Length: 261
Ligand SMILES: Nc1ncnc2c1ncn2[C@@H]1O[C@H](COP(=O)(O)OP(=O)(O)OP(=O)(O)O)[C@@H](O)[C@H]1O
Image: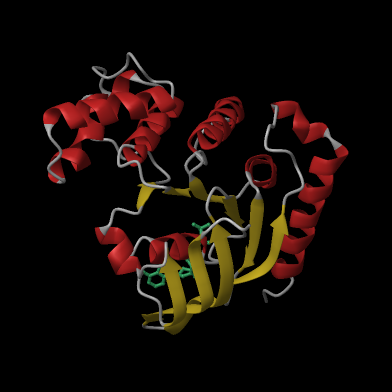
């Protein structure tokens, strides 16, 4: 039996109106994401990756077509706190400790102090930052700060995690470590993850499904279901199976690129 649908897009279009005319950020996107999947979105700048996440999060409105999140409209899903959002930069408040940063959205939502504490401790444990709750963001490395932002997104305990290039600004070694940690977190929690990246190895290493996109208009050019096992040590990246998937992603990106003038 198939897992239930978490995100379902049918002929989804979104155009931004600008002084230079309409920008077709998403054109006829059809995509079905099921519970427990790890889906990466990859493509050159401007192909609509962020826009797609923003539509799910109800930060942008579709122009036409349909989008459902857990069977709800984006507006209903936002009110039901159906997802956590992790941005490119950590976006932590420097004057608040790590635990106070994670607590902020929980305070706004009116959780009791003991419930806040339980959720903060649980989220910090998941990103392996227990013991750092009293530190300020500037006392942590870039990678730890990004883990703290992931903890903040996890504190709602939503089934869906939207991650917009969360590790893009980090060096390769830290990124490798966070990729492995994220996979562990994903298999422990069975969350559904939508992850934007520019990196082919990162997309192939993390994903059960890779969505290749191309710009002008932003559209999906290939959807690749990974054949890699769920358990993935970092050296899986040297196996023929891994390289084969990476090759298909690269071909998809190249085909999309030739579309540009
Ligand atoms: N608020 C906006 N108003 C007008 N055009 C926009 C707006 N936001 C995005 N765009 C345009 O829509 C297209 C898709 O942008 P989007 O940010 O979704 O792409 P992306 O694939 O995430 O790019 P990147 O990899 O650079 O983050 C681009 O051409 C962009 O310039």
